Image 1: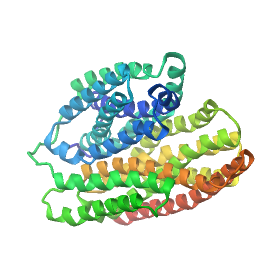
Image 2 (image 1 turned 90 degrees about the vertical axis):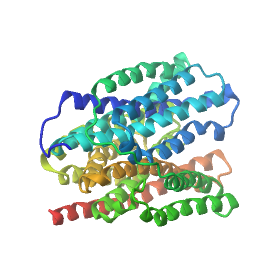
Image 3 (image 1 turned 90 degrees about the horizontal axis):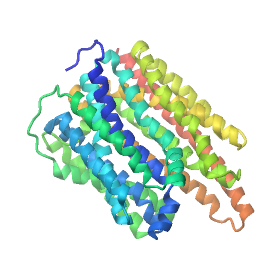
Image 4 (image 1 turned 180 degrees about the vertical axis):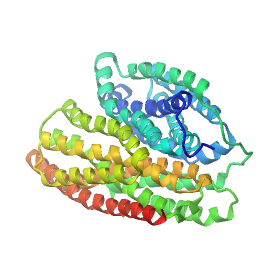
Length: 466
């Protein structure tokens, strides 16, 4: 185990970077490919609901793989996990680079989802297992910087390549990155913990998978069809049956896949709740701003993407700066800076008249705050649970981020569609979209205040514990 204090070795930094690039490439391909959906619908002759599986299917599979992270950590070395996951992802990239039909393209994307599902929790497992405690904030910042650059450059990157060279070029450009990551990881990733021959808790995995899969489906279903239909009810029963069954089942297993006992630690429970709510709000902006910019302000998709770019870059840069603040001054300073900025930006979004520069600046403030808050919130939470719970904590945070992203998009789509539903003319649709976005931003203020209360309670609990 790492010492409480010490220096970061170049080898350790490179190992984290190599694993982070696996998650980076998966997320960037997802965001880059999203801008090509209209083209793919025409080329493969599929509907919008079908083409969305290139994103939804990957999210589902990634969530199911993330759940396996604690078992993989006990059963296989860090290097073997990384090598297998990267090779699988590379195969998926190659398939998509030459694919000629939708089914093959989807299969390639699902393989990339497996790589991302292993890579993201593995990166944080290595950080919390091998990085000295006084350097963890910096390394989490570096990891977050790598991951968060993906959605920042993905849409612009994908749009440019698709427009000028074709959508398959995106995969050819990413391929050398993954190969380079594979080589660096092979040389630098090491193992410090002892392995066990732990058997896979298949029942637990099925129950948790049922919860996450049904949860993502039910959000989309309810937002489009409401709750009063047989499919929505069945998915709700599956979701609650999965999590309820797991909570009843896990206490009777010696080594459950994700130990629910981690939630008995108040700091972790409050932190993961605050993270879930804040990520939901974050994703409502990612959905609502481009739609509002195009439908209300009559700007094109390129302008909409560029409006989000400063905020996305700000998030990425603040992640590493705030990590150094965490190492030097502790959790309180960067977390409080982040909370204040997120609150200010969200209130600005709700009260300022809807305009291009108003939304750009408000989103930038929100994302600067998010860069301070997200990584440090996770570092603080996982650092305050016993070592044997940390892998489960990493997996829960990663899975929650996936799940809350889907919730945020569905929440934004549902609220705006409520107002758009009865618009029977182009002028009324513009007004309805404007009103829907305004109410969505007001709801976001309420949610962020709630998340801030939970986050402040975390800091209070840490002080009392100290």
